Image (cartoon, rainbow, N blue to C red):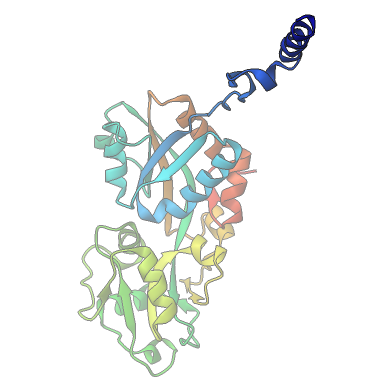
Length: 288
């Protein structure tokens, strides 16, 4: 009898000294769940021509703030981006022009973040043409000149790739070179999106079109970038005000923005943000 009691006591003692091996409740050994950080989203919408610059800023901002996700919604237009901010649909609107007085009801803040030249470019098959005068550009875009030979190029038909009238690129062409009254060439190919036009100029022999200088430089596009009236399209000439045909890339936010949205704004106009833009051949509003 005494022997039995001793064995039981030792067994009980063993359970107390090694409780994790005897207990059927193993909750004490389970690791506490890691704290999950909620990712905050900043939605952006607006002009598609501004997206290369805005996307670069967004990526750099995300790299600095792991808890923030910046989402660029499908491309639309400047007016749509402004309206979406005013309605609270997105946090930031991207615009390729200055905000019109009638668009600002006092609830939004607009700032220009960078400039981007609109460059006239041709397919590499066009040899001997590096500069066009205003009169020559007008003749090409109206269909008066239809052969490259008329402006010093090869004996080949001009393939004119154009943009819709309500797009920033075409508006700039009219403002600085074509004029409002010039009729479009009957055989011009109208391309809705700038990205599609860029692709078409690269892949269509004897073509000409106008698009982002920054995109052309940063992506080293195999196209001919034309001077206009003897002025070369370069970031330096844009900065100096010599090359006039430029887009004003801006951002719009609500005056009641969240701290994260304000943080993105602050980053876009910081030296670090300016360097991001400068590396992609944009001309940032904040100069060194």
